[in-house]
Image (cartoon, rainbow, N blue to C red; front, side, top):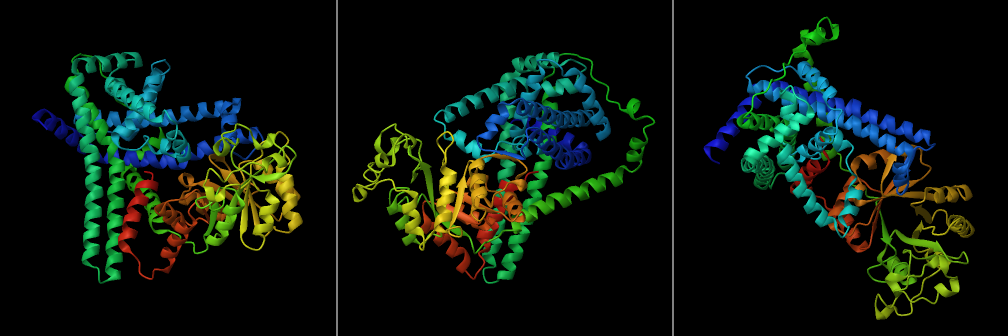
Length: 616
């Protein structure tokens, strides 16, 4: 780094340290407000909208329907507005603090808040769209995820991101997005300082930012690259330092489990403290850096805003009370923030649940050893010792219930025909085994009744309902069949269709039913189900604890990886659905039969849990 960049780095750090107490107290206060006010407001507004349409929650494909409805569009507009207001206040206050530090003047949180609120009268214009874009993309650059505590809480679900990643054009779209991200960010990087510091409109702020970029574009790119290197380099240094030191001392104390436990837990606490500190200081340092870049390259003269809150707070008892007890307020904010973040971190790191009763379900039968959803697959699953066998069922043209998963036969025979348009006689002539291997040549699609008879005294069944026809009688037929065979304690029913599950419950309340949730919003405590079934990406400790508190189980699909199986068991899931039952069984056994605690694994698992689940 040359003298120019070195001087800029020194100024950035010096100015950050000048008002460091104000910056950190503001960030802690802001995050507490998000946790205790903005997020609850979001859930309250959502529940009001859901009550308007007569439901408590929305899952799976209903999400799209809700999003396209009048209520859904209005809800999204309201929440986006709330999110923008919260984000804009944070970035403008931090810019104000950095400006005061640049002038070597003490900053006031109240003055910064009032100054930021006054800026809203300038925002109603088309250029405000650009402010929203900047507010969204500054976060990743500063190293704080999708930006701040609010947007993290309202972030895109992992399942949705996972589905998008499987799209054929996703990688191309990602590259284009990154390029646009860089171009937009570098051109508009100084819009916020210009808007906050200068007494100008949003439109003029954009013009000033572009003018500064046009004269110094190469230097801007260099500064941004240097920032990214230093910012993420410090994070890697923290991670590497804590992990390396922890592992080193754990290895030295190999003979004493008590010392290993002390070192492991102490290292985790040190890492967590460092992780929280970096999360808190990332944005203040970033805006200190941006303000210094702004002043270094500003070539024009413009009237700067006068920051004063005296005309607003004069005579206000609440403000005078806060000012009189300023130090006490700061201590209170610090104590509450430390307590909340500490309890979150401890619960995620140390409250691991190893559920010895976790059940294992063979996905579509033993589908690695035999054709899926076939008699042979069910037999192999029984031999493997599965607790459950999951099978997919749908109705034929003549309303017979058969095992099948896809919408068409294309994957098995190359035909575009669907089961719902074929009679049972036609369906049973289809060979689903030849494509798997010659050993299963002639294997056909079985009826549910045949599988029930086979599994009756051998294995439990998880029957997934896949209604494909208009006014499909699938749920009714399956419920009646289970009742007839008296298999209420041997069969559970799952489906993405909540209506189908309620039909089953109406016919026979003794049958346990579970909703397959790919994505959901709302109050799940009022759902009339006995368990939920979620993808691994959606399984979180908070979800599992909540469902267990409601006396409902959590089943997780489809886990074929040893590390994921370990994590699922440690989180306390009730049932793991897998194509590889043997792997899950071995993983389960290894976790429960070992008498010695592996503190190296526990330490690394704690580090991973903090980085993945703790949101600051």
